[in-house]
Image (cartoon, rainbow, N blue to C red; front, side, top):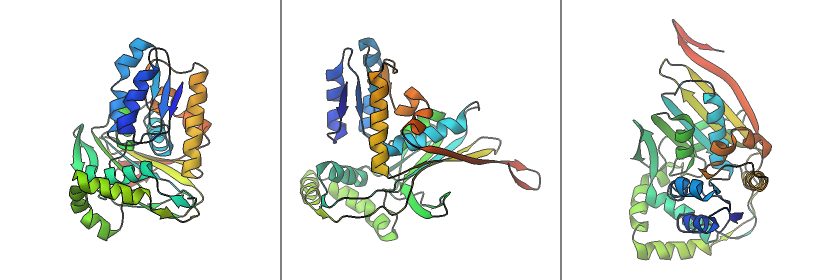
Length: 296
C-alpha cells in the first residue's frame, strides 16, 4: 500500500497509483477538480488489477460527502445539493511550501465550478458566498472554489444541481473582484512560475486555530420542496485529515476495500467519517406546507 503525501496531485496521483497495480493499494489527500477525477477515471484499470485506489482522504471531501450520504440514505434522488467545508486549522511557523502554493494558484487559474443540469459549468471564484451560523454558535464564511467536494457530493447524491463552497476560498469583496484577472495572469506560465516560487518561500507566522471545531455541512433539497440539513463536526482540520488518511490506510491494510477507485465515503460509507473522529449533527427537516414551512 502506498500513501501519496507529495502534493501536486494532478501530476503525481495517477502515475503513483498505476505503479501500485496490480494488487497494491493507494491513497492520497487530493482535493482539487483535476487530480481527483483523473484518479477516479482509473476505476476500470484498478478493478482489473485487483487494486483499491482512494483519493480525497482528507477533511473537506469526506466531511461533506459523508453528510450527503447520510441525508440521502433511503431517499429518492434529490433536485439540489449544497455542501460547505469550513476547516479550522492552526499553523506552525515556517514557509508556505510548494504544495500549498500550487493549490492556491490553481484555485485562481481554475476558477469556481458548479453542477447545473448534471453538467459541470464555470462559476466565478468566490461566488455563492455563505455566511454560516455554525451549530456551536460561531460564524464562518465560505465561497465557491474548484474543490473536489463538488464532485464527491454529486457522486453521492446524483443531484443535477450541486454547489460547493469552502472556507479556503476568497470571501472578501476586493479579492473576489480581482480574482478573474488574477486567474488570467497566473495562467501565463512565466508569471505562474514566478508567483509559485515567491509564494512557496514566503514565511508563515504561528497561528492558532480560529475556531474550536471544523465543520462539514450539507443541505439537500428534493423536487417536492423537502429539504434536509446536516453537519459533521471535527477538530483541527489538518489533524482530522491525518486521522482520515490513517483510518483509510488501516482499512485497506485489513483488506476491507474492494478493487476500483473511490473517495473514502463512496468506498466505506458515511461511518468512516465517525471512525476518523467526526460527529454527525443531523438536526431537522423542512418541507413545504400550505400556509408556510414546517420544521420537523
